[in-house]
Length: 124
Image 1: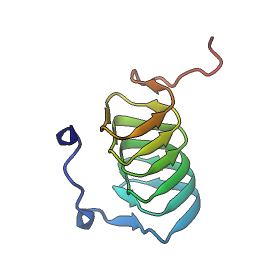
Image 2: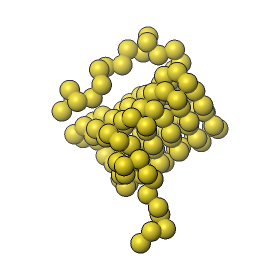
Image 3: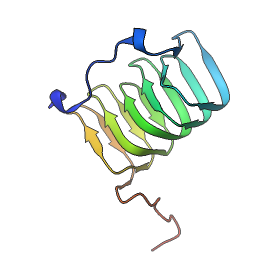
């Protein structure tokens, strides 16, 4: 099943990496691919790909072009193209995307909407 995930990410190809010793809180906006290996809390809005490392801990609302996670995410995530959860990923929150790949071993607890429209929490 792992062959369904994108190719292994070469960190040398990513210009910005928030290292494992980074603990960041706030709003993060970016246009080029970014990798988070440390802790982040807040809101992420990306016009590009977001890669989440295996030891990363994210507590945020995330909007990105593509999201590939090996770490922990708590919060709703939305991608314009695709979301990938590797076997080490742990996600608690709702997902909105047109394409979702969940590798065996990943843990996901939330609602998934694949038509591009976020779920209305007030609907019965």
